[in-house]
Length: 271
Image 1: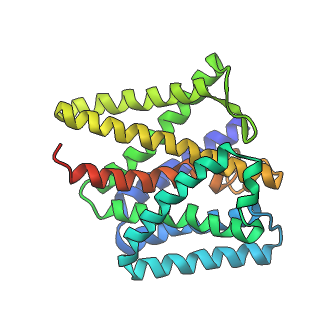
Image 2: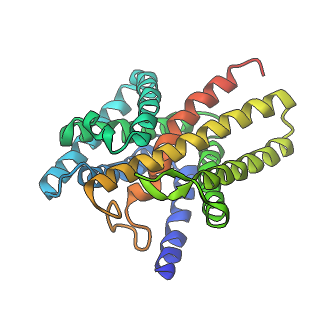
Image 3: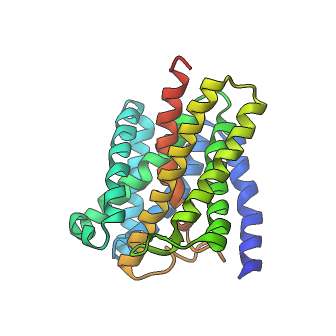
């Protein structure tokens, strides 16, 4: 299993970095769109649909929605706004599980939730790609999530006592959450000081980083909640040793749109 994980990661990481830094415009939209469409195919299973016709149909629907968003960029701010509202609601759903299932709207409602999870992540990455230093910004949000995940794993293993959301993900602890958060903030602080940011701006950026890391955990727990409801361990077996696409991007689906909005606010502030 470990060998599979290493081989898969060794293949996917260079592909991801090449996509982030070398692609732009339509090619970048298609690159990210492929990942999101595969995630949609998996999400239909999380929603309770096993039939391939339904899963493929849902993936096609998401792909069509991406085409619409690409050709109607005026929808982007609305997509980001709805995403923020959704992730606030997701906090309540995650920590209210299993009682919160009654608010999902059944299988059909779960498919709608999938749109709220997947479409803003794609839209957010396209917005980031339009800014200067786009590749580095995308890498920054990825590193925030990855470092937090690694920090949470080791601190949770060493110190984890109090369960974070036992009904959703019994392995996660408050100590792990704090360890992951501190690891990401430490990395952010070092990078920001190295870049010569003024103190007030550094503090504002650390606040943004903290919020992004915390909401990324909600993204992770949201997928875990749907997997637990569906009675499955992995969203699929597309990535040997890593499970499915959703298992790799669940945290990012929440982190990316929130990062986009907060970074936009930071850039337009007086700090």
